[in-house]
Structure formats: structure tokens, C-alpha cells
Image: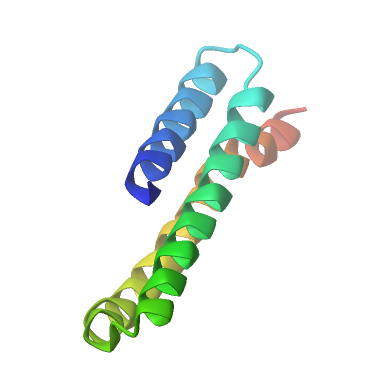
Length: 93
């Protein structure tokens, strides 16, 4: 599920940037991009929670250390890309 939500987050972010550069209202796409990013994180947390409940410690040991860094980077990039048009738009006014 987190993969699907992550793809939606990427698509909404691309749409946000496209709408901004084409001069159209991009705020809904920005909200969708950030919302799908949050939902992706919740889905990932839910997956890890299922592994803990099942006692699948090998999955946790293999996946969590690497995913932690990747998720931090991807969430920060998502926030920056989704809010950049709003911040840049303020500078132009």
C-alpha cells in the first residue's frame, strides 16, 4: 500500500510543479502531494507495526535501518518540492 501512496505523492508533486510553471492554481496539488506523503509514511509505519506483531525481527533488522534514512530524505525532498512554488511565488510579488 505504501508503494501506491508513494506513487500518488510523486504524481501530485509533479502535477504541483507543472501547474505552478504553467501559471495555474497549484495549491490543491500541493496539498495532495503533502497529504499523500503523510499517508505513505503512515502506511510504512503500519507495515513495520505488522512485522513487530508477527515477531519478524529479521525483516525489521534488514529493512528499517536503511529505510529510516531514505524516508527522512524523501519526506524532506517532498516538503521542499511541494512548498517551493509557494515560497518562490512570494518572492516574485
